[in-house]
Image 1 (cartoon, rainbow, N blue to C red):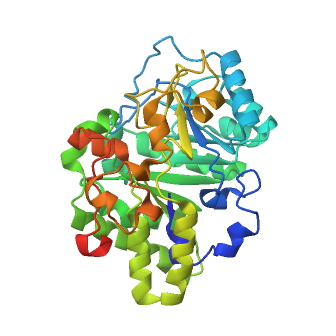
Image 2: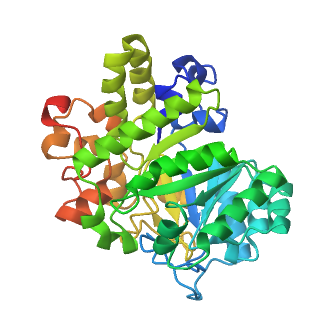
Image 3: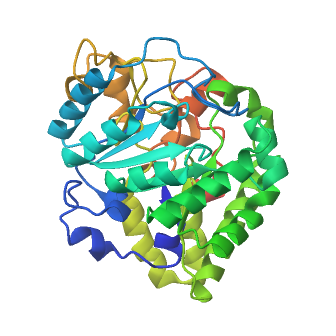
Length: 392
């Protein structure tokens, strides 16, 4: 994640992270990306079931169960292991996590064990009663996916009425006192909706939004040709920075992040270098703390069937299964060569990545995207939009 508001608008200073010793157990949520111990944030796809049919779903979600989901008891065993391992955040995702009746029980158990529990949802199933339950169990955050306004969003979601139901879910979370934010995946067909998303943040007083770059995984692997060109990506990131700054100047600051393309970090730094050189140096220090892409290091994924992955997108290569070996052992004592290499992947990247001056900031970006397009895990990420001059 690249915190546009934190970095570009100066809401976080290097000293903020240093004050907590940069240990993940001590850091507040908004500073976790700057931790130095890199205890993984774990995404748990607790189900493959979903009530929508999103065209870019990385999990190939469907409206039925495969019968191989971890049970409630197995889930609590996983949570015990993650808590003992020092995992700071457990993100419940899917499919649609709210189709599992035991989600509140599992999330409450994670909170009891000292972890921050958050959910990633399409928002359509969050009734006022459900929102109150999620508040009562101590949920830290609800991220609701919207890919534009009604017409565009419902086309992506594959179900008419998905937008209006998600908006109602946002209202219900807000009324219950739960921090809620938006998740938006950028592509050719909705890039013009970015400004509308910012308008919605302002109109509904939504405090947070994450703009995701497209990852070629799951059903999203069919959308490679629908990704932005490098020039289009630069314009989109510029727009996100411009609108974030405008909200801050209006006295209506929002937490704005971009996700899944760590070229955004150097790009933001180079822009600040022209606008505010002093702040640019502070940003560079924070970017070095961030250390770029953390797949297989600072983020991990457990699937509905217990399989462990480098992240939620890399579902074709499992490192083991928690039904046979605890996550903590799989992660810290890797028997899989790929997991071992991902933990120090700067040694293995090829091409322009290997000689890039931003390698310590970006860490080679997304390996799963490079593999999807080239067949080579260590090839340059095709979504890196920095020019040869900017990286040399």
